[in-house]
Image (cartoon, rainbow, N blue to C red; front, side):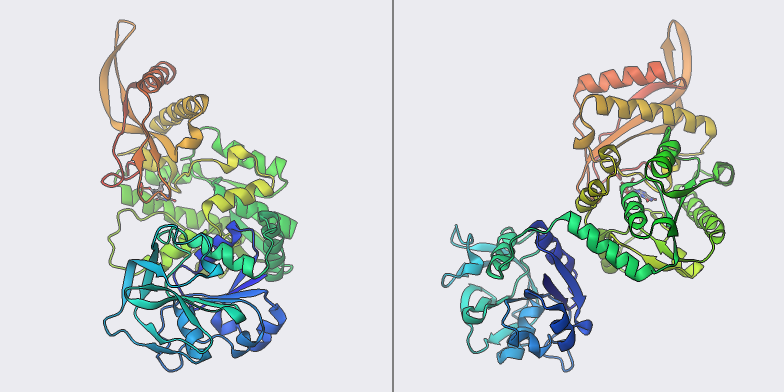
Length: 512
Ligand code: XMP
């Protein structure tokens, strides 16, 4: 296995992700925990030193254990990792002085190196830099293999000892050939690339058992991919010690509650509490039309309800959540930042502290697509794993203006027809998210020689990678026409269908 020593870079997890893509097993450990003894016990086959925010020129700044460089194993230092490696091995690092580099840079080769095999097919290679300090003198035994205008030691290596050091970040998307560098490194280290998501599952189960022991765990199940996979994994790890709470706020899609509960209770044998709290939520939402007020009411009730059911579970000490790595990065880099709140996305962030529960987050290191692979590995059906995201406040934010039961019923029916159309035309997996919003406006129509005065609805379908930016899906006119006809014919209460062609930005995906 490979050890990543984390010096606190925002993108350390991306290194792990690149290695998983190469089917290499790795673990990330914070530098504070990696002592000489730790290294001896862990017995890594290779080590990667991550980047980090500190400056090696500062006294007391983090270091790798000295024994690392005596182990005879390949070491790759990235950014801060490169700088501490140089310092520890006898080179020099200087502070700033106008050579800081942030963003795109180009590295040109100075001689051939196995680590860079497949690079420099053109004369230079784009890389992503993010450093204030720079190496001013390389350590004895090192040689330069690549330079950039502001980093004369962009790539250096002591080939005899298999020590490699790069100033840039090969793990990020903006170093387009970065994956190749990792591939070369793991090959040099002798990894065969036979590790799979099946092995991740085993390891995750071992860690959950270690953390939870014989205590009880509760898990909020939303029916979304993340919480579903987390619940399935937890169940495999601790069996009956897990209780899932599925909060039914009356704002779910057609048949959704039954589908989720049946699947987890009957097919996967999980202990699921179906918290039927429709009356409570819809009652509190009566007469409310402001989107943020809706979110706040739902968020607060969600916590109250969850707490009520969790209190009934004897000895619950842990709360399991399907937090993914992008959630972790976002909360680190944006919390307290100067950004404006567009929507206060409903979450239960404050819940564990309030209830005195400890968190179990077995998906914290994974990305959405990896979670889907793990879900398949755990036996969740493909139709479940491939589901479009669904927001916590549910249909409340797809019903602009006041929410009434009558509108929700109409919305559910229209949405079901629309999704059925999308599936029938084989488009579901090409679309990131699709849904209907019922508009707070009634319009006049004519059906069978009679006048109608019913609601208008908007169809929404977007492509996206992460929900942060999105574009509308270019349906054919035939598809749109057929879908509009079906909705108007099959859903009493709607007599007009529109298609929302706003991208994000300037729009958002949901209507509220
Ligand atoms: P927007 O509308 O902000 O949506 O472009 C981006 C993604 O986030 C989902 N979304 C939410 N999810 N609570 C959630 O859990 C919310 O309050 C919320 N608002 C939007 C939305 O469905 C889309 O996937």
